[in-house]
Image (cartoon, rainbow, N blue to C red):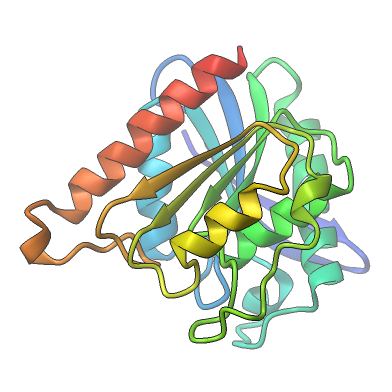
Length: 222
């Protein structure tokens, strides 16, 4: 049964939703949304459902700007404080008996999680969906300076058609990373993990690939 939370911090509060795994729970994933989305958008809901079928309980939450119904993302320090506050709330509400604690999320939300990980945040792993390595059309503006400081295990999914993550640039960046970083390329997928009909497969099949790889990665953390 899902549980809605109000998470208070820094004089304000935001919304969060905890959905336990379908069946035996092996991990809790604190999942942050992308810049243009929110905790209830279709992409977040689809990933959450996919992971819940594979033993992940999932906590989704809104960053403060989305809670205010603004389209302008908060500064990164505010995103990080919001993320950390939700993790603290989840620990207090769920306890330590619900499996591994995984942080991360989609695009900007995953980047915020990776910034926490680079500061030795206490978690068992980092799970990234569509990491935004650079702005669209600006491959020279890499968002990689903090990645070598991450020490926890990482699983990162990006599509080979992602306009915010050129595969050749990501491969070069990964040469500087010290963490156990598993890079999973979704053939033909874009930043939203959408594939063209000409690819011969469906978006649902891409999500199944994401779920199976996440299941395998989690098993390796145990």
